Structures are given as C-alpha cells and as structure tokens.
Image (cartoon, rainbow, N blue to C red; front, side):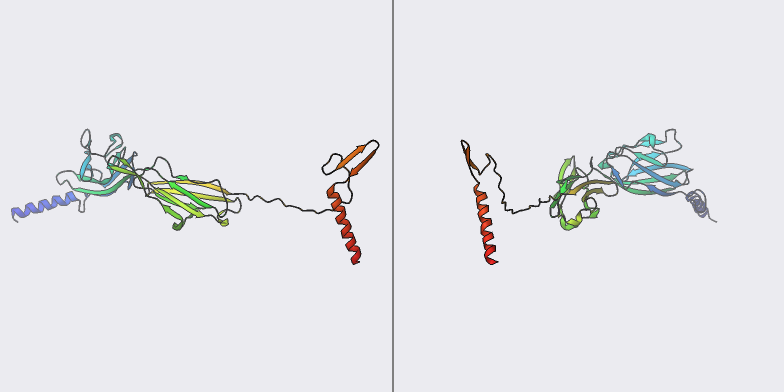
Length: 309
C-alpha cells in the first residue's frame, strides 16, 4: 500500500473517532431552549443540551452571528463575555449549559445559537438556534371607559377599552356575559403612537356600541357582565371586567276615583264655602254652594226615576 493511501486511511480513522461513528465521542447538540417571547425589563434563560457532556472544548453562544458568551471548562475562569448591544449576561447565574440574560430590551430581539466543540485533534462541532422577540407590555391592564352602573333594556351600551404604550399593539377583545361580541358592534379606532428613541409605543382603543336586550340581563340577579381582554402573543394576557345592574322599574300609583253624593251636610264653622252670621240670639246659616248643587242634582235624578216608573 502506498504511503499516501495510508495517510488518508489514518485521517479517516481519526475522523471517525472524533465524529463518533459507532463510538462514545460523537458530539451532538440535542436541543436549545430560547424563549419565543421576552418582556422588556425582565430576564430570559438560554439553555443548550448536548452529549456527551465530557470531553468538551468550548460552549459558545451567538446573537445574530456575533459571539457574546463562551465557556471553556479547562480554564481557571471558564466564562468569557464579549460585549454586545442588547445582551446583558449575568455571569453568576450562567454555566456550561445555560446563559442568564437580564434587563431585556428591544435590542435583545434576535437569533440565538449555541455552538459546542469537542477537544483536539478533530474539534467536532455541532449547533442549534432559537429566535426570541422582545415586547413591551403595559404597566397596567386594559382600561374600560364609558361604563354605567345601571342600564335598562333598550339602552345603548357605548364603551371603550384601551391599553397604553405597548409594542407591538396589544390585541383587544370584548366579551358580553362571557360571549365574544360580534364584530358588527365593534369600532376600531386609529392607533395613538408615542416616540421611544428610534421606536414607537402604541396605544390601541377598541369601542363597543350595542343596544341592550332583556335577555342580556341575568334572570336571577339582573346583572350584565362586560369584559375586555388585552393579549400579546403568548407572553401577556390581562382582563378588565365590570358589572351593571338593570334599572328598577318605578310603578305608577293606582289612582282611584270615587264619585259620591252626600246628602248629609255638616256645618263647619269657618270652613271654606260656608257663610254664617250671628245676630243676638238668632242666627242664619247659608249652606255651601256645592252642597246646594249636589242636593239639586239628587232631586233631579229622583224626579226622573219617578217619571219613568
């Protein structure tokens, strides 16, 4: 066998040992865990799972192709940080299998790749990546405006729901008695934007105009439940909920009309409609005019009754 051929065979043998075909030294990155969504101001943990865990020369992390973290287990100080905008590594919480990123910003958004290399002479290498999108969530949950404590069937429910200063805009949804409100009653207002450096924060508002029906109020307590939810992917979900009662109906007092004919008249001194004069021992009394009219009417009715009988 020629010398050149022996060299090639030896090289292939070393390659097979280093790459682990049929051996224990085969290096592979099994998985990486990168949060799909991060929240500005919070933290994120990047994890890299590989095998075998022994005989490793280095574990490195890259963001958008730029190295920011390396772990070389054989060194006295195994961790080395390479400054990169938007990446803030907490060294005390990082190791050969995970990296702790603190104080996330919008610039932390990107593709994160874990690269693991074996020892000499082959330095077999494998890697996997994951993408993270950093979002800005509001300081508080959604706000409902225009709501009243009491409504009646037929009233117009006219309310707005707002979530302030988010990126991207939060997704707002209305529910009436835990049922999704039809799009026909929804008003989507233009976004209000606020500058934040080179970025913009968004404030969306979702309106609801709906004529209430009797069946919208619960039968037992006459309650109306209104709910607005704000969500941003799978990273943020908040709810604002209010309740209203149905206005009580005021019953009109029943008016009873009674028609009476009084034949007995009692004199009432000083009362309205009476004229009385006293002279010495004798006195004359004048009956009230309405009493005279009532007596006349009574007599007239009695005469008519007599004639027809």
